[in-house]
Length: 149
Image (tube, rainbow, N blue to C red):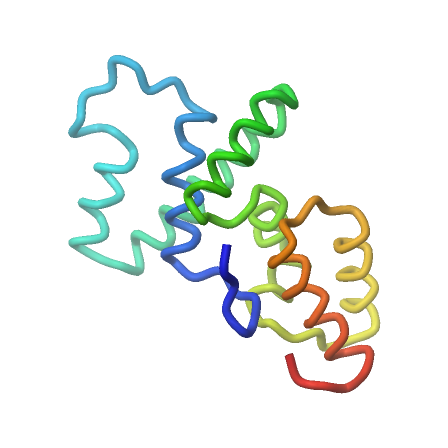
């Protein structure tokens, strides 16, 4: 996945993650086309982009909760699907969704030593894809060495 210069997750990136992850979190067999989650999202997108973003965030929260209980083999298949779709990795979306690390990733800038420690711990404990790891490392380095990300 290609991250922009500030390691933010755009609406489109969040949407791509959600569209890719939904089949791994929910059994959609027998669901009619008009009530399929992606079809409903597209309908909301046409009406109100802000509501669509709110819906994507809520749906991602639900997906992450469900996926936290799934076996490693299923998570590995999802990880491969996310790579193929050029969507953010599960690790990056989990981090984005956490309040502290998510705020830093959204902002793209570390503001304090406490945030620096959180980001270092996140880097050490996450299974980020190489490009994502580079971008997060750039945010950490910018704070540590006083350069711009």
